[in-house]
Each structure stands twice: as C-alpha cells, then as structure tokens.
Image (tube, rainbow, N blue to C red; front, top):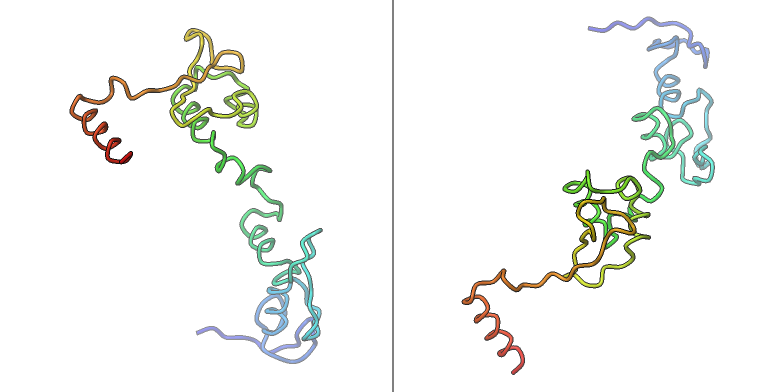
Amino acid sequence: MRTYKTDKCSYCEQTKRIKIKGLCDSCYVRQRTTGTLEYKKKGKVFFCKIENCGERAVAHSMCDMHYRRTVRHGHSDSIRPVDWGDRNIHPLYAMWKNLRRFKRKQLCDEWLNDFWQFVNDVKERPSKNHLLKPIDNNAEFSGTNFFWHKQTLKGLLTEEQKKCLRNWVKLDRE
C-alpha cells in the first residue's frame, strides 16, 4: 500500500498530501494536463500555442492533434509529405506504383523518386485499355522512352467466350 507524506505543496503552499515532485495532487494534475502550474479561470477559452492553429487547447497549451504529435514524435510538426492525399487519388498513381515495384531497374531516377515528374512526362492516360510501354526495351523508362499501347482482348478470350460476348452485345443493343 502506498503511503503519502503530508507536507506543504511547493506551489500552492497548502498543507496537503504530497504526491510527486513536491506537489499536491491538484497542482500535479494541473501541471500534467495544462503544462503549467498557474490556475486558469473557468469559462475562459485558451487556444493552441502552435502558430496558425486556432484550435482549443486541451493539454500543455496545445490542441489535441499537436499534443498527440508531441507525445508520439517529440515535436508538433507534421511528418506527412506536402502532397499527402493528392498522390494516391490521382488516376496514374497505381500505374506509377506498379512500375516502381515491377520495373524498378528499368525506371529513370526522376520517375523512380518523383511521382509528379512522372505525371508531367506521361500526361493523361488515353483510356483504361492503354498501358505504358517503352519504345526501346534496352533503354530505361523515361520521358522520352515511352508510348501508350492500346491493349486489346484479341487472343485473350477463347472462342466460346467471344461468342458469349457477341450475344451479350446483341442483347444490349435490342
């Protein structure tokens, strides 16, 4: 069983049970939750001390997001890249990821390290049936060594599948 000594609190100077660091329980909790020993008037709203935040302060004069970042990483700066959320919704992102995964040795350094350089070079995908192919298989993929190849279903379907597909298209037109 834990025993507490009764002494004067080093902040409020009241004789109470001393918990930790020479502070009574209420002063210690206030210091832990707000980051300061000063009393804050109830009803007064405090805002996050981080520049341009404007959110309500929760702990250590910071909003919940900045406080959690500080606890987890030791600083309140964002660790996400600037374009976070923009890349993975881009229509070419899946193609770029697959190129990096399966053709890593064939990619130029600009495409390998910079998604937006890849987008600027290849522009827009003509259709979902187009794949990115190199013009020269011996050279690396780059802004000058690629073309959009239209992939067809020819040769991929059996005769029976083609017949079913033709019948389905006929029914759809009627």
